[in-house]
Image (cartoon, rainbow, N blue to C red; front, side, top):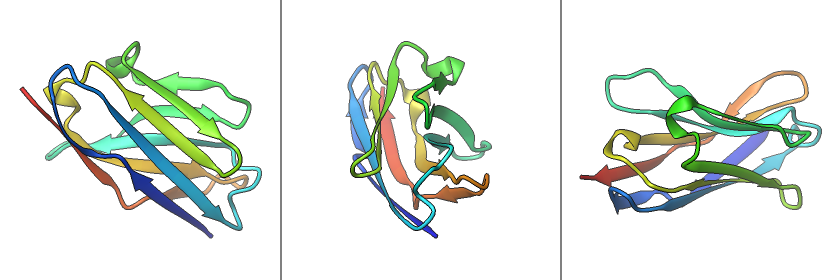
Length: 117
């Protein structure tokens, strides 16, 4: 089992920045394949925003390349998402995600990010 605790969401004006953090704990955290962030806007499907693998490879959605940066710390197991130059279309609930060594997905409870124009 894995518990993911997110923090850092909130309200920001367009062009501003926010930093999301997610702390992972539990028996399946070790040797995970990767951690990342997804988001879901009202009326839309959940989409992957950024992923960082256990080897440090990063993958970004085209819509956030050059604006968002994902990083992780191994002790404790934490993944961060630095979001710069935010746009109203970035408004969504952001979910932390961990992929275990046996390819099971764990999800956080979600944190709201709202970008005003």
